[in-house]
Image 1: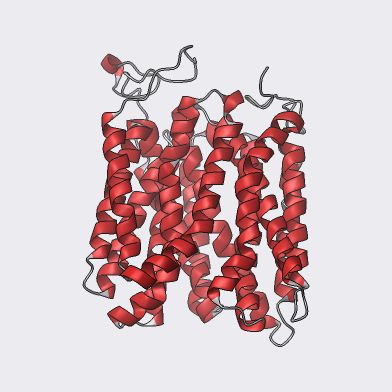
Image 2 (image 1 turned 180 degrees about the horizontal axis):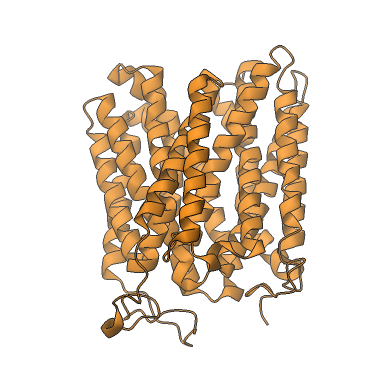
Length: 470
């Protein structure tokens, strides 16, 4: 949990530090943008493969390696002599961030039985929301008093301490053995040490390369849309992403040891949860992108007042995540995500009506609905994914969840920018209306999630652990 918080805090404090970084290192706007883009591409392209490494070699070991590398890269960023070093080290930081993020969910899946995962996932979401809320304020204080380099130094000691502890501290064995949880003394799930030969699935390196290529092309194209629009290079990037994705699907169907095992991506609830995370994060982050433009460029608020106006959204996410876990336990994933999707859609629609005469309370109320809805969706969809995951593939499942939460925001921001460009002169309402439709589209995925009886529609099968406390 603390590792995920550290990564979330790192991204938000850097946003505040970028103007000072650009001035001090005499960098261009494009170079500064690459300090974020390089990290995002590295993370998004490696998450699933990193999860598979955790499944094979141990999530705690991957978490330790990721934390130590993340901390070392942060120390290097603090001492970086030029913007080129900053960009390169941010890519390195992204590689190690990819190692540790799926491991956090993999460790949760190994530590808790399926029917008790809801609240740990909710608390993890609350902690991430708190980091996102605190990041701009912490970053602002550090940059003003200690300079932009201090935002990277903030990560070094916690990351190194967590990494060392993960190497030294052995996770306690459960009081009652779970037949789905592998023996920690066994190097690979389900395979005794003396029998680890061909029985162990080989790492699917060609599949990992094809998936990484598809995600690199897709994310690089999408993050460039806000600045350059849809160019021929952008269309070529989408075609390359589609070709690599097609080759990946073909390869996965034919290989004996696929990167995405059938028991991971096969269940209807898993595909629905991933789709819901993409649509919800696209709507959420796309709206935050447009909303920041409205508050600062249209209403004339400074960055601090903008952060304070949007703060109720982060507060609602922090406080609402545990409530969502309780609601999911009582009413099931389907009704909880329907409620979250409705709140998210309503929040986007409220913000689409903002103009110069809108009261601050109304604007903050829109952000509150946004945060409450997204928090409910994120907690519930993530819990469904982790519950469905076999322990032997929990890392891959965590990688898929994190990939959805990286691709969704890029899609949302690109869609919002495209509509803003096409509707030049008519305000931001059309772009936010499109994002509201994207949020509402998530309802199509909600109906495929388990209900209070633990069954997904049309499958007749009860989903693992969906009725808690039985």
